[in-house]
Structures are given as structure tokens and as C-alpha cells.
Image (cartoon, rainbow, N blue to C red):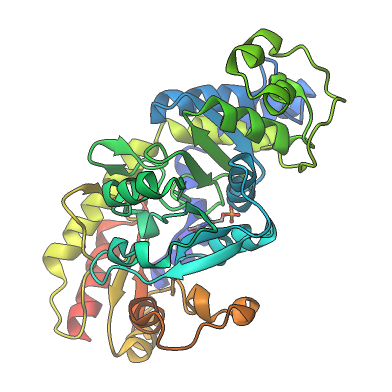
Length: 400
Ligand SMILES: *Cc1c(COP(=O)(O)O)cnc(C)c1O
């Protein structure tokens, strides 16, 4: 027994990436060692590149034309926005409750995030409040599939079509989740994933993925991840905007033809090798999360606690299991005293972040997002959570 197992006798973690590693240790070790032995540490466009092979696997799993491995989920958003031609002076609509980088990505490229409050049931962007925020400067909407549940994509696509907006899904918390049978990330124009270690599909370091069915966006994104270079014929796209030309020139232009100011944001070969192993387990792991969520839903009964809502349109993968309580601080302290670790996603809504002070939002502007920030609590949820641990979580919540 390692020391981790002993710790776990006393504490129930919120998430535990070490346990997952231990279940597939040999496969992961082999994958990592094979990269080390290959001497190929940075992706290239050869078919033996781990990144290229992972992209193929993801294209198949997600049923999408193009996937582009990048350095992290934040860069996936930044590069997607730029690939869609969005920049200085543009406005991009985003929900007020998300991880900071959803809004950060918009601001980094010189655009302005315009926040919309959340739906009071699902906590994803409130589609009823999007249209009133659209101006002549609005270029895109970034719905966030918060906690592993997709936003109301049909309504969002309708609004986008009517107003000629690009839809970039922030699916960082939702790898493998579905909306009306479609995989998260593949429903809008572009989808972004994060492979941050604690995400439901996580690497052993940073990683991210852009997915799209749009060849122009894919070419531009491929160029942006390698210094805006002409690899994959993306050069041609910007010169002519002609798809046939891209196809005929694909691979012809050399690495040192740079036509855009891009980024150094490739997905790492070692991370890609690890993710290729993990992708084989993702459905199994997501299914376990769903089962544990069903067990929580059935067994947690306490008037001071509200359980998460899942709409019928969604296959929720419960990246986090978020409950609501007006007595959050007491609840958190009580659970902690019982060895149960919890987390808050996220304690400050985006419109009230100091970094966005200049946008002029006030407390009270986004009541639902603010309530999530003050009342929500994530309880232990990961595929390797043991039965006795789940029962202890349930008992403590019922006893509180
Ligand atoms: C994790 C996360 C990101 C950012 O991903 P990184 O890989 O950490 O850059 C973006 N959006 C959401 C909703 C996230 O949860």
C-alpha cells in the first residue's frame, strides 16, 4: 500500500488524479517511455506523431472533421477566436459564470467580453437574455458547458444564425458529454477542450484541443498554433479564401513561411501519448460519474441542500457535482471536519472579477451567477470514488 491509500482512509478527496493513474499505470508508463525513446518530443505533421494520432482518434470519437491539439484550453479559446477572425473592437458574448479563461481569451485578443446571466436551473448561459446584449459589434457567442452539461445549443444556434454570429463552444468541462445525441464541442462552429489534469479527460500537464467541421477555421488554427506558419497550406487560405487552393497546396509550403502572428502552442507529444491511452477509457469513466450522480440524486435528502438539475436534452458527464446551499460555509466546514473535501466553482462571477472592473458591471447585475458564486459547493466526484466513500458523503450530507 502506498501512502496515498492510507491518506484516503481518512480523507475523501474532491478529485484524485493519482488514483486514475494507478488504474492504468502500465499503459501510461509504456506510452511515456515510448515517446522518450523515440526522440520526437514536439509534434510534427508526420503520421507517427502522437499529436497527429491523438487528433485522428478524437476526430473519430467526436465525429468531427478536424481536430487541432494545442498547448492548453485557454489557448484553444484564443486561437479559435482568432481563427474565426475576431479581434480588436469586436464584442463576444459569454456567460457570467465560468472559469476565468473563457473571458480572458476574449480580452487577450482585444475583443470585449459581454456577460449574460445563467439559467437558474442548468446554470449554463440564459438563452432568454442573449439577444438583448447583441450590438453591431457582436461577432461571437461562447456558450460554456458548465460542470459537464451542455448549454441550450438549439436556442443559441438559432440566435447565432439570425445575427450572423460564430458559436465557439467552451467544452473544457465536457469531454464526451452530449446534447440531443451530439457530442459537446461539435455542435457550434468551433469547440474547445482542456486536458488540464483534473478535467474529466486530463493529461499529466497542460493540453487542449480545438475541433471544427470548418476547413478554413481548421487551417487557420493549425497555423496559429505554430507561429502562424504556412504548414498545411493555411497560408493559401488567407491569401485566396479558396478551399480548392488549400487542398492543392496542402503540405507544400515550408515551415518557415509565416503569414500570421501566431503562438507557440502545440500539444506536447508526451501528453498526446498519455491522452491516447486515456481516451480509450473516457466513456467508461464518464458512465461511472453518471452512475455516482444518480446515486447522489437518489440518496441525498436534506431541505438545506439543492441537488443539480440536468435537462432532458443532455447527457451530463458530471465533471463536477455541484450542490447549492444557503448555509454553504457551515456545510463546507462540517464536511471538512468529516474528512470530505469540497470545492467552489467559481467563487467570483466573471463580471465581478477585478480584471474586468473597467467594463463597469455592478453587484446585482447577474443575480443567478452571483448566487452560484455564493451558494454552490462541489462534492467529491471522480470515476475512482469508492462505494464506502460515496456512502459517507451521502450520510454526512443527510446528517448536516
Ligand atoms: C479549465 C477550463 C478552461 C481553461 O483550460 P486550461 O487548459 O486550464 O487553459 C477554460 N474554460 C473552462 C470552462 C474551464 O473549465
